[in-house]
Length: 151
Image (tube, rainbow, N blue to C red; front, side, top):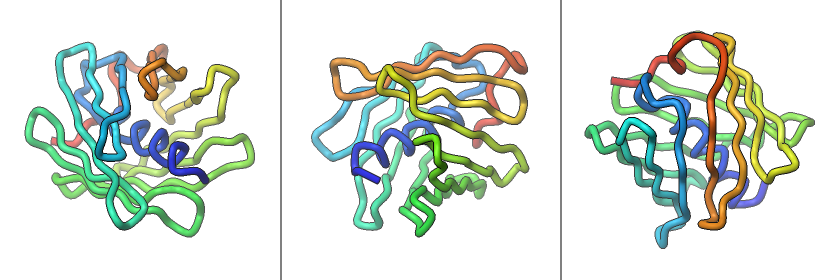
């Protein structure tokens, strides 16, 4: 997987686990090899690439996460609250992800340069590339909130 593809997957993890009330986000590349993201509830996150092939992310509410690439073409991510996520690439150009709370998601690439993702709670997400080198994502359906965010 390309470095940019890995970054998109890392941002998908981070955004999926953000504040439960947030329903959309916009990300842009930064000079640290990561992305800066803003969510519709005002929450922000900043990531930078690390030597493990993943990303270190800090959230505006003080939470952090760290990911590393794995042999399945995905990322293993640990959050500051002790929760985790692990992904593997799939044949649809996306990733299948399992979360430590028992939930899961599956994504596939789309023609907009992003991913269409289905979560086990019925939530769906669709992202598209933006001119800032990042992704814009919208969430629909499923429960009224996204999967539980790390505290």
